[in-house]
Length: 196
Image (cartoon, rainbow, N blue to C red; front, side, top):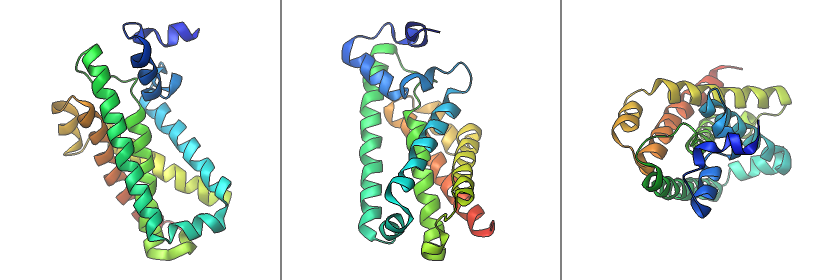
């Protein structure tokens, strides 16, 4: 399959709008023929799972215990929310109001927030001892983050489904995944507290 075929839904767009669309779709991830939201979420997990290896467990542990780290993480989440919202609003003006399945930036931000909330719960309860120390523990952490987020993103419990159905805008498209991430982070944190 050629890139032209993959990105065919973007044909009505021009220039910078097309670049925004490719970014919001995480490149070809959003155009996967099956379950683009799941593919986008999985790619986000793979990218985020790489960072602890870059930092090393000791530095990561020290960062997670610093209040300023959490302030930066929350600030980054807010900035990414508004960047995504504005980019999606611009595309919706060009393409019409609907939640396009190929927009998976919202899923990536949902994975980020799920991971942060899950970490906040387990580190808040157990301190640095809660950090995954082995590859198996890291796999378990990321599997819980991925699965809990996808469950809530697919099931759309209240108010996620309401936001998803009644607020077709950049804010609504982004917000439904962030609310799902709050549920997922809570459940993920609880699961990892009780799953040795």
